[in-house]
Amino acid sequence: MFVDLADSLRGGHDVIDTMDVLVQATVTHTRASEAAVVLADAGGSLHVVASTSERSVDVEEAQIGTASGPCVAAYADGHLLEVPDVHGVVDRWPDFVETAEASGLRAAAAIPLTVRDRTIGGMNVFLREAGRLSDVELVLLQAMTHVATISVLQQRDADARDELADQLQRALDARVTIEQAKGFLAYQHETGVDQAFALIRDHARRHRVRLREVAEGVVRRELSL
Image 1 (spheres, rainbow, N blue to C red):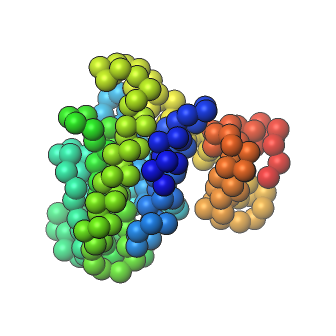
Image 2: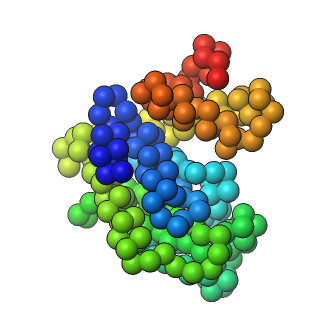
């Protein structure tokens, strides 16, 4: 898994691909049911760039919309934050709890994407039952997010903040295209958007191309999936 993360920016892969590898590795190698990654733009606003499902997107968007929740807090202070039972934080983050429960998610952990003093976003992982991930799983998640963050930052000098902001903006733009492609495929195949994204991801991995390139081909009607 670490090799996949470290290699995901090589050979033309980009931030979106790296974060997709991260969330998929998270649900594969831990007991987490869902995961989503948010990255900050040049102005510090958070945006969802990768997720395992629309359920996790909904929970992240609820946090971003209210500027509150475990992932927002972990990004702000740069520390791991655990929520063993969402009921326990209803007074602190009512909107987060409402959306999480509606999505069938009962527990969470938020891990900042940090290297040294730089935090570029965060990953939220969710469980369907109340409880916490094991210490081993949490260490693994922190290691994976660390590798993913390094993969994003290693392409430039550590002080090149404008260049980083440009890359993150390109990632956000790519996410818009991917969402358009998901919607088109969901309509075309009369299926859900999660299944539509699986078509995009599978094609990208089989042909070793970027998710964005596959999505662009779908949106332009140049690629049939």
